[in-house]
Length: 458
Figure 1 (cartoon, rainbow, N blue to C red):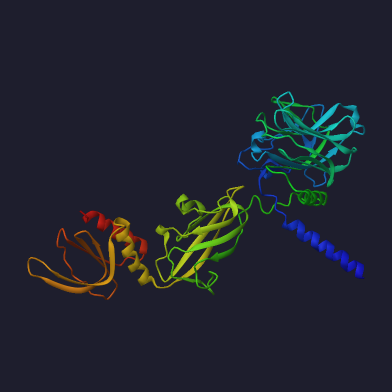
Figure 2: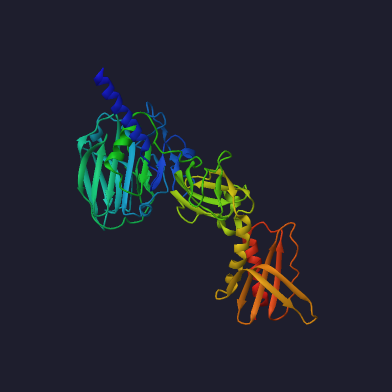
């Protein structure tokens, strides 16, 4: 009984570990070999992985593989080429099953690859001696490795290859490292698109495999040993790649309002803040671009000006509500919309806000408007003002703000409902008066004051 509990604990740990691994980072493309629509291309290009003269693979492990015939060099086209691997690193993972009883009856079968007809190639292939090998163009030459474990016909294998310029080239077969060698330095050359089931030799499919491929994936980085183990276990269990919702909408979570006093943003406990342009940290389960605004719009409707400044195209985001979208009422809303990096799917969430000290915010923006136009101006608050013009009209009252610059003065007051107007007059060019009312957005107050100063300063 104790032994069973231990084994169950180990199993639960492995399940948790597998689900935690994320293969969306630096993915270039994946091909489930079941339909073109379910393939993924990092650059959003259509027709990626289009199938050419291939049939369903009988007895496919996942039930969606495709059979290639070396006689006709059948293949699947992709739009992936060497330049996609801009990190001077690459990884590939796939399931493969060879058909002939004696693979050595052919000279070599390319599982995937591209070539310029010389040594500048990248590929995996099965050789005449039933060994897997790989070629990765490093710095004008080749890094060449031969697997140390033979393969047989009619058996599904998980094969992976990782390469890092100046690091190592490794070949994995069913999770085991069969070759580990030094890799050259330099970036990959750009030539032709990679073919699956054959090599793309200057635009012609050559030396295709006689067998089946399923669940092919390419990355712009060298996957770790533990990641290869996860892929091997998951794919041999009949799963597709454990990508979290790649073609779906991002899931937004772990939202935190950094300047809020309390709350979580829902109808029970709204966020509470005096900041009309608050900043939020949050996460998405896949790489995404996010936008934030005060209007209930979708991702496109919010426009590029609402884009978050930090974390674009990633999974950790920092977003500050823009001035043109600042909170304007005591009960207000913030809307967050995030679009997947891998599709047009987007998701949106709504945050309820309790905004405090709005009156003080409005009045503080009067001073900001003055200094926006005259950074060196002196700004006084709750200023008592006495004015007498040439017609002997007297006015005495307390204004919210006064700006002083050289020999000019600007008196600005915000009048709330029920408050009487101060009734000050302009005494040009020395004194100017602006009284605002019925404006809910502090930013609008700020811009109106700045425009007032700009139109009267001399």
